[in-house]
Image (tube, rainbow, N blue to C red; front, side):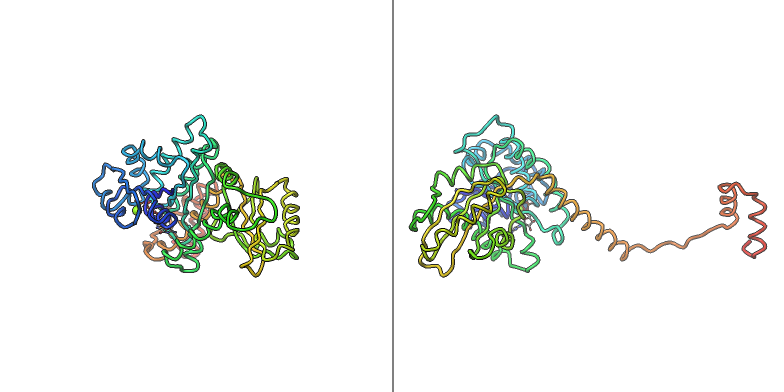
Length: 366
Ligand SMILES: Nc1nc2c(ncn2[C@@H]2O[C@H](COP(=O)(O)OP(=O)(O)OP(=O)(O)O)[C@@H](O)[C@H]2O)c(=O)[nH]1
Ligand SMILES: [Mg+2]
């Protein structure tokens, strides 16, 4: 079951789990906009929040968490939570969830929660969204990584949405479609004939409970081209790029069982980094070319992510300041008394005051 928190989180959770998602928001109006099986309003002190949400202030979400604490912490056990990191509600409520999980000694594997975040595209989105994201990554996400009490952390970025001018609804569908490529791995294992390896539901669930960032992608595999080259060229553009793979898994679907041996060169690629992936090779007669779905778990420290955001957001802010200077600042006329200025110069340069004044008089400046 999916749990959606805040505006973006609720929309994505209900898209993934049509009809069976649970959504949280501080605003009843926002809850009404999304179809979900269960809708829970977190009560914020401010009455404006009931109508308009947290208005980009994560403190409002944080404070409202208290009203749903027990329900929320119970509900997210073993589930997938979606939220954006830029606004106030998703960021605020999820921050406290992550902090609670981080404070626990340990969590059983079946109770680990997968988190799916949507981060803003700093070059186009408001600097409030970016600043909220930086605090979120620096604080609760950093702590969660250190504590290791979450499942996979999946970070989608709105970059492609803005760069390719994609309508929000279409973009959300793209996010869910890409997530489903990963989530359908064990389902395909049951539907298609197995040629080699095996990833069953248990293996897959165990993989999802590891507290690392997860980057997944799907592409047509050409066995005559080095695997690493193809993988890098086909990184999922909706997700942040991966770094330093710790664990991985892949599902290779082949139109022709004669190609089965082609997976060995993929294992060779991962062996160079001492990674032994879980894998499954299946026969899919409906395909024309081999298709591979790969997932890489990596532990990019949130502080590095924060550095990226800081750099972009710094540039973003600087540009805005420069722009406002261009547009609005008119400099007042500079009134200089040359006698005073001359006196300053001779005091600073320890020259004879008269000498400086005489020169200025001679050249007609005084
Ligand atoms: N991909 C995607 N991003 C969204 C969507 N809705 C909002 N966002 C992004 O999410 C961030 C804003 O967060 P929201 O989820 O709207 O905010 P919220 O958690 O409801 O918090 P408040 O509105 O402040 O109460 C911005 O970066 C938006 O671009 C969506 O449907 N899809
Ligand atoms: Mg909202």
